[in-house]
Amino acid sequence: MKPTRTSRAWMREHVNDVYVQRAKREGYRSRASFKLIEIDDRDRLLRPGAAVVDLGAAPGGWSQVARMRLGRHGSVHAIDILPMEPLPEVDFVQADFTSAAVRDALLASLPAGGADLVLSDLAPNMSGVELKDQARVMELAGYALEFALLTLKPEGSFLVKVFMGEDFDDFVRQMRASFAVVATRKPDASRGRSPEVYLLGRQPKPAAVEAARQAVVDEQENASLPEERD
Ligand SMILES: C[S@@+](CC[C@H](N)C(=O)[O-])C[C@H]1O[C@@H](n2cnc3c(N)ncnc32)[C@H](O)[C@@H]1O
Image 1 (cartoon, protein in one colour):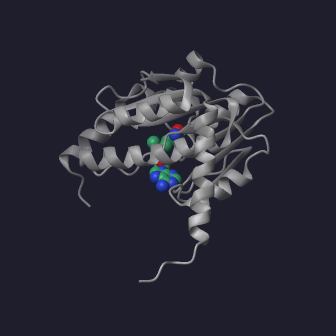
Image 2: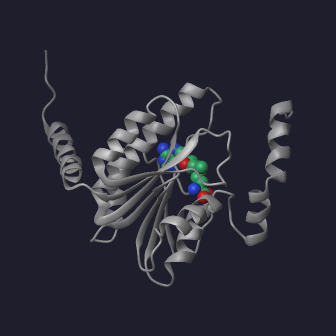
């Protein structure tokens, strides 16, 4: 396919981007690594020995940072719908996170005590249709929030990519109902014109955790009921 003027402009900007160049020089798989580095330098999320889940992990920039900062102990459990080149000591599964069966299997594969940190950089292939992309990112963030509540330890944290726009305020409300502390982060490595920001929730609220668990039980019960006939 012939490159369009917009795609050529994007490529030129991408190649000249300082974070793209740094990623190449420093051996990171994506410029996104610097977003997590910046957030972690400030918020100290990646503690040695932690169990970390990386949702939407490919090509692996965040998993690389997590693995490096956890030291020799701790674990990284990554998932993406796309394939990812293996990374040493990162458990990767290629699967669709929107599938309930996939989320159940991922939950079951985590250490028994649960996770210390759930990271979600989940984002669909951008269609360029703003409202559609916004809705899809927020839908993925919703699944990630529900998942985080089911696995996080009481002192655990959840970092999630969201888009400013419709549904954003609603999602912030959900985060506030779910965590004792909620903060917004827009790292320098996140392009200024991008609607993307990250929300950081710390210390899941017991009532929200209970509600998330109850929702799973209700779903399972509904699934086992015989279908109603007319
Ligand atoms: C912005 S990229 C993540 C970049 C990554 N954090 C890094 O540092 O390299 C978003 C990722 O979300 C993944 N994704 C989107 N929808 C998904 C889904 N339903 N299940 C699993 N992964 C999904 C995409 O395939 C993509 O790799």
